Image (cartoon, rainbow, N blue to C red):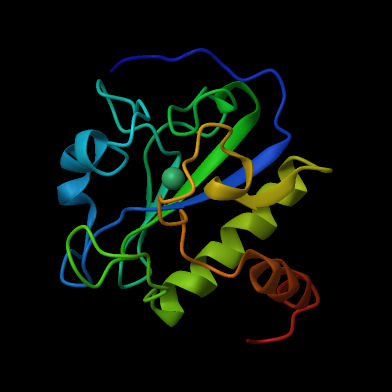
Length: 163
Ligand SMILES: [Zn+2]
C-alpha cells in the first residue's frame, strides 16, 4: 500500500460530491471519478483515492486515504484539510449540480464532521467550491449543498438534536 505523508495541520474539513447520477451507488466507481469527476483542470489522486472518506448513497462510509495522511482532492489546500465525498450530486450526465443526497448520507456526513471537529478543534467545515481558488464561475458547485444550512445542522447535531 502506498503511504502518503502525514499532515502537519488540519484547518479545513472539505465536502465534495462525486458528480454522479443517483443510480451510481457506491465506491466501485471511484477510480473512474478520479479522472472524470473534476476534469475541469483539477488533479485528483490517481494512484489511490484522494478522498479520506466516501459516503455511499445508502449512508455507508468508506475510509479511503488514512485520515492523518495528506489527501488529493483540493489543489492548494491538501496539506491542511480532510475530505469527505458524497456519492451523487447529478441528475443528468454533465448537468447542473443537484442536492439529491439521501438522508442517510447527510446524517453520516454530519456525524463524521462532528467527529473530525473533536479531533481537529478549530477546523472549519466548508464546501469545495467555497475554498477552491481555481474554480470557474460556470462550473457547478461541489458539492451542490447549501453549506450554511449544513453548518447550522451541524450545530444542532452537536447538541444531540435529531434532524
Ligand atoms: Zn470537489
